[in-house]
Amino acid sequence: MATANSLESIFSVDYKSKIQPVFSVCIRGENLCGPKGVTIDNTTGDICIADCWNNCVKVFDCNGQIMFKFGDEDGEGKMYRPDGLAICRDRLLISQRNKSILNYQVNGELVSIIGKPGKGDLEFDYPRGLTFDESNGELYICDSNNHRIQILSKELSYKTQFGQDNLKSPLDV
Image (cartoon, rainbow, N blue to C red; front, side):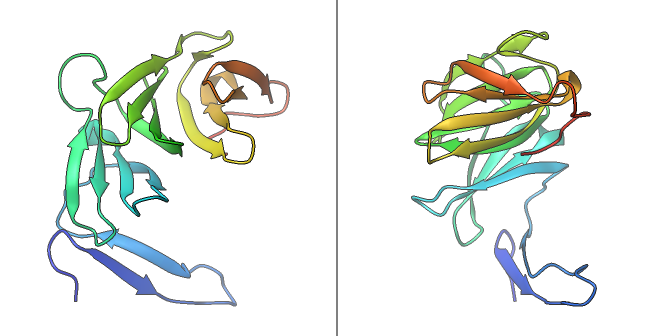
């Protein structure tokens, strides 16, 4: 049985309907309100969750114990409706509704803010899902209301984009 603030694993398989998850994880005892993006730090096993309506990211250890949260403090780096998460080397990248990507160290220290509102290169209108491609070091960003995917280089600078003619409000990559 799971204790408060612990991680509970539930295994269930339904091969015919494919409705039931093969594996699911629940965090008990921590008030997550509108959890969106989830990512796991492969070096530590820590679980990072974008807690959208609480305007923060919460970090849990591999046993489900909350370690810390960040982003809900006033000042630079204050989050507004975090959505997508991706771990890119030693950085945690977070998309947020106020049209930017936050670049944090995995320990919760703000490094930089990437992008601004708009329709140009490195400009976003409701960035959502993020994916880091370890094979080439590129970051893929769903720029939802601009109906495209922007790709950033290893250095997190603009590289290219695609989808403007055939994507409608992409949510995740």
